[in-house]
Amino acid sequence: MDTNTDPLDTLPDAVAADAFRRLVRHLRHRHDAQNIELMGLAGFCRNCLADWIRDAGYDGDKEAARELIHNMPAAEWKATRQTPATEAQLAAMQASIAKNRVE
Figure 1 (cartoon, one colour):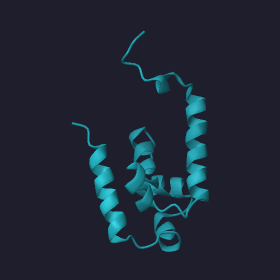
Figure 2 (cartoon, rainbow, N blue to C red):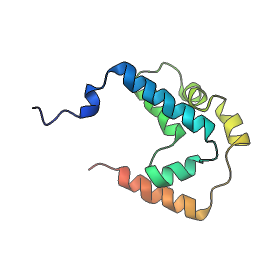
Figure 3 (cartoon, rainbow, N blue to C red):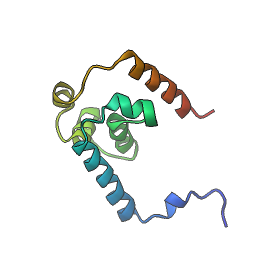
Figure 4 (cartoon, rainbow, N blue to C red):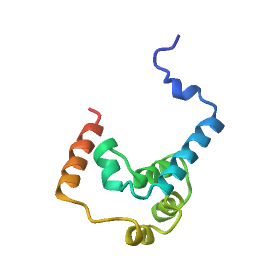
């Protein structure tokens, strides 16, 4: 057995794509879960997902990718869904981002 193979790489692309779409739709539904909270807890947010689809080959620019994930223009999302971040949320996000660094 190849110990360098991540079991996720054995998932059929259609299964992985369905799971990704379900995650994005779940996050669209749960707009009460703020990006800053996601960043503080898990080290990624909706905007990260937009960056990741671009990294994976999506042809759209940053704004198009965010619109795809948010299901609306990013400026509209920010105006209608995003709340101001607290100092505690910002600190949690910074600590969580530090855990993402791979050395």
